[in-house]
Amino acid sequence: MTAQIFAIANQKGGVGKTTTAVNLCAYLAGAGCQVLLVDSDPQANATTSLGIDPRKPGTSLYDVLIENRPVQEAVTATTLPGLSLVPANLDLAGAEVEMAARMAREQLLSKALQPLHCQYDYVFIDDPPSLGLITINGLTAADGIIIPVQCEYLALEGLSQLLSTIQQVRKVLNGRLKVAGVLLTMSDARTKLSTQVVEDVRAHFPLETFETLIPRSVRLSEAPSHGLAALSYAPESAGALAYEALAAEFIGRFPVGVEAATDGLPGSPDSTVTYR
Image (cartoon, rainbow, N blue to C red; front, side, top):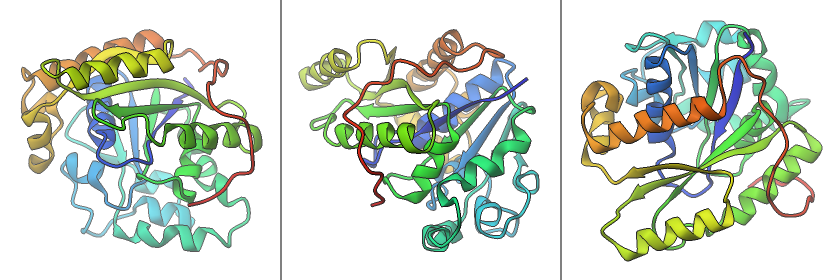
């Protein structure tokens, strides 16, 4: 077993990135997969969403990247069988400055995760809402990127910049990286705007866009405050059922035990990698 590794990223905040990371992982684990979620966002929202307090002592991703602690020490069990977490904490906010002076600074996460490749079916990296060095590390470690896009005005704004960064990482740091999927979130079929955004995104990414739409859902918003995924908090809610459908679609695209393909990357021309 060799893990397929996916970064969940969008430099635009508030698009449902962490909600997707937590709930997709939860449903994949519920389907019998062995899943690891790496919280690389200094806000540690994925960590708290799974009921783990980032303020309590313990080995975190910061310790792995900066203090050279073995990643196995950071792997933390969650309440969901089959789902483990490498937690984040606020120390990670200063990691980019400390990483900048390191050799092969873009590959720190990729190298750190190597001992875990044979222990999981899927590894997901919840990247921060930026195109900084931590996100570059996530893209360098990944086979593919999943891009959540909210069904709202200006949804496509900034995607060209993200795609350009993906192309640059693919050229310079990680030749296997591809766009694994574009996920439409916060959908509201009652509004014309939401429907239009869905049509626009599918026109731009006809092969990459998941069929599953993630609706706006109060239950999805409430679940993190209880430290639970939607699967445990409100399994019959529309949001939970959507992520259950997404997990099934995801397994169909990326079956367990099948090496991730690396062709078919859309995007803009290659250029020099920059950090923002």
